[in-house]
Structures are given as C-alpha cells and as structure tokens.
Image 1 (tube, helix red, strand yellow):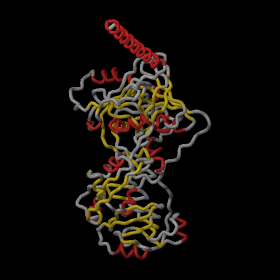
Image 2 (spheres, rainbow, N blue to C red):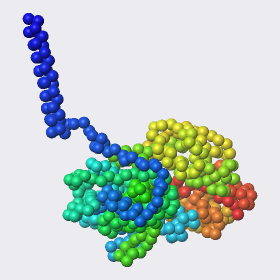
Image 3 (cartoon, rainbow, N blue to C red):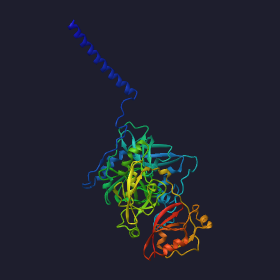
Image 4 (tube, rainbow, N blue to C red):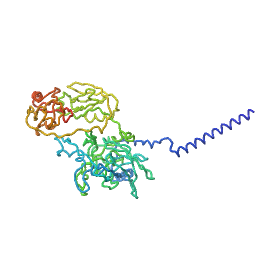
Length: 535
C-alpha cells in the first residue's frame, strides 16, 4: 500500500505541474490575443538618452555628408489641415502666397529695434493682431519633425500643429510619397514644442533621433539643419551657432525662452525640424527666423534663425507625453537691475531681479512689494533676472519656499507658497494713451504732472478712485521717456505715498540732480516699480 500510495502521489504531482504549465501557456496566448500583456517600455516612451561627452575631433570633407546620410531618415515632413489661419505657413515665417515681406518677428513680436511699435528700449508696446479664421474653408501648412521613439512618437513645434484638424507625416526616401496620419499627444506654447504620435505606421522600422547636450554649444560650433523648407523635403543646410541664450522674443506674453541663434539656413517649413551637432545629435528644434524678401514671393532666410535648446524640451517631454505640463508660479514680474538702481536701491551690485509688478497671488500674499530685489529663491542665488522664472517654473506647485529680497538696503525673507502656472490666464492688458498739456513740470525729470480729474481719468481710462499724480506728457529727448509714458499714475516716490500732483512734485524736487529715484506707478490698472534718474 505504501508503494502504491507513493506512486499515486508522484503521478498526481506530475499532472498538477503539467496542468499549471499548460494553463500558463494558454493564458499568455489569450493575453496576447486580447492585448492584455504588461505595458512595454516602448509604450511609455522612454526619453532618449543625452550624450554629454565633450564635442571633439576633426571636421573633414565627409563629416556633414555622413550626418545627412545617417540622420535624414529620422526627420519627417509634416502637413496639417485647419479651419483656422493659425496653421497657414505665412503666419509663422512671414510673407504670403502672392507677396508681402512681413516676417515672423513683426507678425508676433513687433518689428525689430527702431520699428514703429517699439519704445526706445526696443520693447514691444502693443500686442500683434489676433489671428482669426479667414473663412470656413480648410487651409494647409507644412512643417518638420523628428522621430524620438520607435513606436511613432515625433517632436515638432507647437505652432506647426496648434489648431490642426488633421496631421499627416511623410518619411524619408518614401518613393510612394505616402503620408501617415498622426495625432497630438501634448503641446507646450512656452517652449513652442509639441509631441505627436503616429496613428498608423509604415511597416519598416523607424530611425530614432539621438540627443546631444545643448548646454555645450558655443558660438562658432558647426551645426546642421534638416527639414522641409517650401515643401522641399529633407533639405540639408549647414552653418554655425551664432549665439546662445538669446532672449529674442516671447512665445507667450511676458515669458521669454532662451534660444540658440544660428546662421544655418532655416526657411518656412523648417519649423519643428532638428538642429544637429557634428556628431549628428539633436541639440535644438528649429522654430523661428528673422526673415527678408525672397525670389519666391515670400519671406526667406537671411542668416538669422533660432532653435529651442533640446535640453529645454527634454525637461518637458514627460509632461508632453502625459498631455499636461505642470509649472510653478509665484506671481511677480521681474526685470534686470539697472546701473541706476544699484545706487537708488542701496545694492552692492547688479545681481538679482527687480520686482516690477506684484499682482494678486502668492508673492503679494507673502508680503513681496514692487521695488524689492529678489536675490535668492529656495536658497538658490538669483544672479540675473532670467534665473528666477526657470527656478520657479521647475518648483512643484503647493510647495512653500523661502524668497530672499533686498529692501531699502536690508535683507528680508518671505515664505511663498508656489501655485500652478496657467499660461492661458496670463493675458496682459494693453491700451493706448493720449497726452495733454498743462500741469506741473515734473521737477527736472522731463515729465508733466497733473491731478486725477474726471476728464483725465476718462482720457487715460484710469481705474476708479485712484489717487496720485498723472503723467500727461513726457519729453521724448529725456531719459525718462525710456521708463514713463503718458497715462502713468505715480503712487509712490522713494516708497513714500503721493496723493496728488503737488505731493509728487515736492518729492521729486527734493531729489538731487543726477540721482536716481524709485517710483511705484499704476499703468493701465497694473502697478509697477520703475527707476528714473533726474537730469
């Protein structure tokens, strides 16, 4: 009996194991049929690794030929359809189908220095016209992109796909010139970047881009652009990095994105294509040009193009994949410390960021005021005003961080609770102001001051109940013209409130000639801190 029992147990165990193995196999087959297998790493879109090794080695006659040969397959041509004019090619690179020489800067950011919409500092004074639909007909546009994952993820510019009702992608060396449908996964107006994914893919394997380290690029470094200019797919152009960290313009109002400037030819249709280093690695996404006339009747390259650094885009790739990018905000508008403000604000040097405006928000709640100079954020030094937005944006909303400022020559620290940035809600108000004669001379500052009267309040559309001294005229030849404009209401002089023209004039007369003075002003409903030097 014992021998029989032992044999039965062995037989039972054998069949149990056999059934378990069969069940496992059947389960795997069913899962594969029903697409229930675990999500692969490809489906989560692994971010391409960045090669941080220093650029070195000679550039010879075959360098750019080899880059073009090996990297062109990962570049794609993109065409879109839209019922909005935002996708018209000419909206982004200037010109038009039948003529016109306006360029991207003029269309979106105002003309260059000295243009009609610029003040003496070259700052924009009015918003570009809103883009409106032409009619109910479809419009088409072209752009470029590059593949970053074998399962069909492609990077391009936000402005290439924004508002598109249909997106199609064409691959390198496609003899049938076939287009494949794609969809938007995520967009980021602040970096003008977008992630799209193929809805249908070609049978062949996709060539994937390699990332370089854009922080290593310096003026004079060789670069190559590959894209779809004027519909000429996979055009190659070569040049050098002309400059880095160019804060040339705002992709979104009031927020600038440092860019790489290059003289590699970039034209309409290059938008979204890669800018490559001499190893064939992507170090930027071509996004904008400063353009001139062209024999083709539209704007073209004049050797000044711009690319978003790939390090900047890499940092938001996870958010693009999720369809939402979360950034921090503390609610201040800042600008660089001017030479005059070193003296006027009792500073040691020009390090830091001058707080120009503090609208309602976290910073205002914490106690930050216009005229403060932010020198540290979350224990990190602020050497330039551009340092602050990047640090704040990278901070998780809901976090409370220390903010160190200089106020009247003394350090003060505030605890600021960072909130989430909403780009769509940031719409600066714009208005035109006239000027009028009369009033006080402004005590050597080249301005004319008046009391707030009902007539002046209506003329300059001043907020109800506002008190202070209204600037009604500014001498265009005075240094003050760079800072103040008609319609500004002076609220404080050297942090002392002024309720009318007389109090403001008295305070300004007390300032010695050649000295700078800080003022808190109200401009079109927003409070700003400015500094003016007395002549």
